[in-house]
Length: 419
View 1: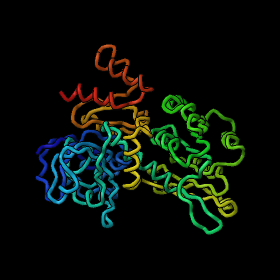
View 2: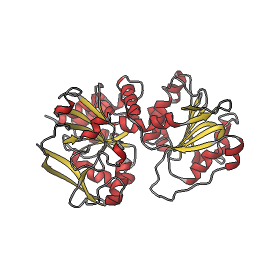
View 3: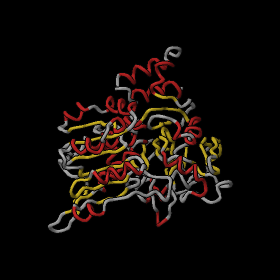
View 4: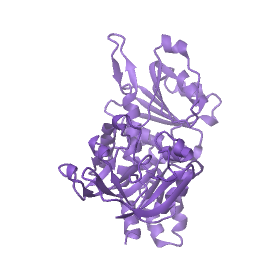
């Protein structure tokens, strides 16, 4: 079977090519990819090429298919897995395998397995580790966004607080506490807000900081303070750039208590150091942002660490249970990962968008691999609609949903481009 895929041959060398896939083995599964959202981790991969720890060293002769935030349909199942999977099922993927100590991962390491493709082959280890998941939701994009949401959920689960009586660690955020999400009006930060508002052991307040007023304005539309209030949670968006003393202002929002859980979503030293200073007694700061500088450092207050039990940790990625939780909550409409998406495009837009990802404003770039379409901002639909009736209809659909991508819009795209 032929596939069309974006393959990496080296640093910043991505090529959209059509080539033949081999017949699947008895322990493999052939899938049709429908959606694949572009991750900043893929940009970091492309930046480093074969120097990336997950990439083969002979990329120039052994190119890999990029993309790992994918969803689609199962097409053909090898004999080994016929008891568990069948053709026609929708799937979501957990790419963080760590199979028998190997760093190989879909979208980073395999010549025939990656999300930026029309069809690809899932190797045995994906199923063996339970990383190919049956998805019951209506839309494909929510399954694609399950992977970044699982990273967010993993961060929430990994935070912890201490118990001085028996020294057990209470995992997760502090119930009725204060959460600070720093640099939180980007796609992942908004996903973190959406998840924080649905927790059973809910916080009392969530404070989200940013320095980009345009991002803050969009965040308020996507997830308003009123939305949070209905759930009994205080939600604040704060532009720290406009404040004379941002640290004092943020502390005052907690009546001087400080923040029980701090998530740092930007790899910027002053932000991380402020987060450390704003921790409450037994506060936990999660450095969630992934820096590209291997020597990235910041100062922490070890006096507070000793006397007020503050602690710092970091998380990257989520596990399979986090992904199961993410796609289940999405399918039930409990969380709304669409808050992440600001652009949509086709398979022909992936290579250029990936190589230029930091330069493209907005949040998640969601791509559909079964057709061609320029990468287009949702906010551009209105202008395009002046000359194209389809985009006028798509714009109406988006505006009815707070400017967010949605299942109806996805179906409209399929009807337009998959004729």
